[in-house]
Length: 433
Image 1 (cartoon, rainbow, N blue to C red):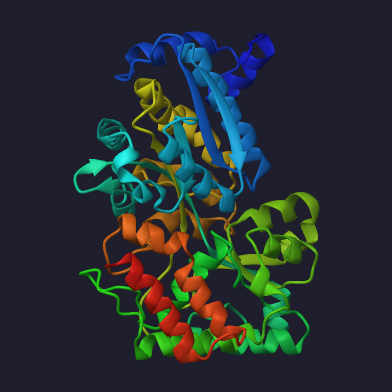
Image 2: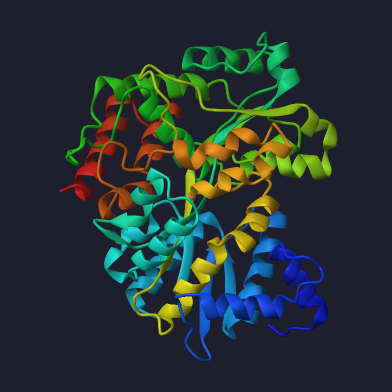
């Protein structure tokens, strides 16, 4: 990137610095103090997930520009859809060329851990400086005692609903248990203000809410020893509940991707869904009357008797074959330091929740009460492994949509309940062998 006075001033705003502060002076001071010394003439290729909140992406690119000013490195950023990230990252992991950093979904580093650069020193630096990591960060970032990825933030998969619609359906507040949730969805359908959640290959939306559904009824893909236990009465009950929900949903959810429910909600066709805060952020900008009629809730508690939420973490990995390992480490450290991270997560407007305890204090979490539930999603989230070990096998299972397809096959009538479970069991046993 080329820098003129205007771009430097914009970068200064991204760093949370006063207008009179010289960004370049700050940036040089940061680079000199950083334990991660950038290689001379470093060029870095970074692939990230395609944004759902425009202001987040704008702030991120300011952050990139500030890092370039700090270090002299050049960063090329490419944006890919949720569904394309993992396949493209896997190709690069196999060929050993094309990218240095990947900012991906869920447990992506665990798909090819031997190809990931050891980032334990970055984790230690950030944890000691910013109040420590939440336990879920350890689960997503570590393999054994080695950090193979750094969890940057998580997007919460919470209930988005129209207040007037649930009131008309006879509910003063969003139901806190699965029995009440089903009754609400039936009433919403009767009022022609339906609910709807993805049963298609939506990497974010479908995986998060359908894992919640399985776990909420006590079902699990594997046990603590990674033995496949999906064939259980609890799984069958979860499938029956999922089909009952599906029958109340707006048509078409079996083929939904990660943007489908956003579009349907903003079009006024959908009145309850599970999503990040991006629908609300868009509504505030484009449809303020709709935003005023929206709120958010945690996922209901099922027969398991405890929260069983899976949220969507975005973890950054560096490839072991990168020619600029120090630049990769420096960029991650720079991004998560407070002067950069606070404005960036503020710009995300609740779409992204932090894994470092210091950032509980960011004012974005209290400025709008409808945003507050998203603050704690990185603390609340389980991992795709469920009871099992988060590693290469669990990463493969979620990448292959085993749980999603099981629910979709039964809900849509493609399989009976035994066939849907047996199919998931076969797939899981091929991975966990």
